[in-house]
Length: 341
Image (cartoon, rainbow, N blue to C red; front, side, top):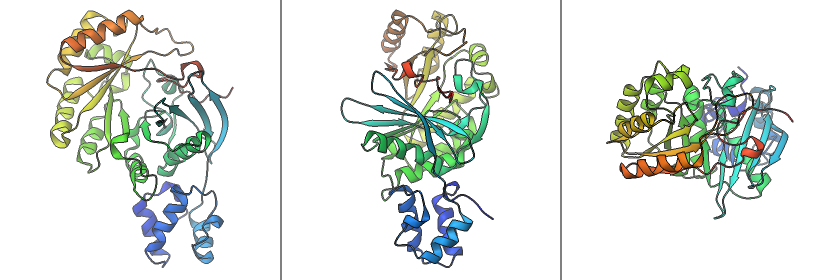
């Protein structure tokens, strides 16, 4: 059966090497060419026997995405529109910091099926989930364009990572592998809308990857309104699962809360959030809502953001206001919609 090489996990590549009758050390060679040296052709794998290269070329095609558009923000962020081998489109964002760090916000799917009312990606629907190597390709494209090593990865672009769980974890392990991209697990964050089974599985993973949960409302009726696909995943059950995550891993997770005018920004919403977070080992990221074409939902004023932060601080809940980058090029949270200019 023909399968793109980048659709395979590291273990599956190992099985392919074994099936081809090659010695086991060829696995690391091939993985290194793919994910450390980022080659675009088997012909570049010069230390792999030609007969093996030809065999792999036929059975496991090697595809690389093309950059069809790039935009640069006034704050230095860069957004890339990438076309995959089958024509699917994704967007990726490079976020440089003044301290030398380079963060990449990568997509886990082309489009998204979650249909959150405040997010541009969900309005277009889901095209398909990404293969493990397609996650990694996004990092390489950003690294090469910035001519700088990526230090942090956030899976917060298009898609719901836990709706593509196996490929997401396969990709994270490639990114984290010391002989491949070698990015520390604690510098890799996965953001989910709160899929309960995904969080439960994530709790059992041995690596110390970081978890972020898109909460956006601590009142069930409000969350059901703005995140309709999550109505089957109730807040009380989410709280139970997250308590299990903390107990199982000993690690703190983050809540993401985008404040929306006259939607989730009332005093009642604030008190619900404080009550929901009490007793949990969590950090709240307050996010300024970013402009989305044709959306009636508007951001709150800065005074509201500051008030919420002060109240959360007073309640003893760790909190910060996220500095939103790239909004002028539609590269900020909730704005990714893979539009061609």
